[in-house]
Length: 306
Image 1 (cartoon, rainbow, N blue to C red):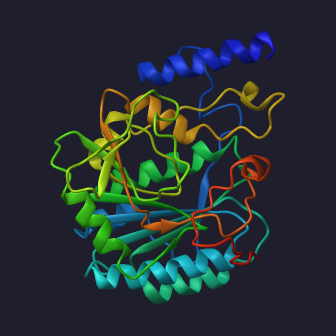
Image 2 (cartoon, one colour; image 1 turned 90 degrees about the vertical axis):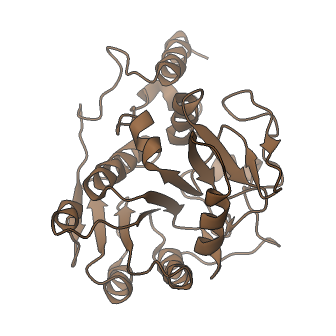
């Protein structure tokens, strides 16, 4: 590891643990700021709040080059929300990392399933791993404008069942902890029992449905307002040297969430997964997925990618 990368890696971990951006660290606003542009019948989240229609739930879906999986997920989400009687109390935000793929079927489905309660936004340039923080920062701004009770984050290759939302809320509500901040809804057989990015041995709650882990990944997770408050509604931008000599490294988003929340807000995970992941080939982390597939489908399968 080069001295520069070693230094910036240490600085990254330090500022995440301090939960405070170090002077001289990369800023989201420079040198190449990214904005997201609304498409179709998208609504400004601020306008939704202004007209007195603050939703109970905000769902954020991040997507890139996966039109069909994203469309399928939205259909599954609508069914799960209807089963939980939340379809009229939910705002859906889809954030596209541009790929040149035609997302009109997704826009049409959003307009059909969530009329007046959605936004589809596309980044002004390709983000990749180094720019994932921009998508989440945009989601943070939307959450601040909407002020929902809960926010659900999903990646476009997640697969969920009709009872997903009802079960997710039941698991959330059974956690009797005023410091609960995150509930990860995706679990894998090879999840690290001693923690990832932090050392913490998982602890199952008496119900056997949920465990305290203090770390989580991005596939599917539910958060309260406390999540955004602990993070100051702001993400940190990684140093570009993060991927120097190791392009398969992750985006750093889930790592910073874990490190910044450690000792501030408690992170839980379902013991039995409520969301499937890994059925679509990875775009951002293809080399990393060769080493660890992160596939919790009952059997290896391909959902198809567009």
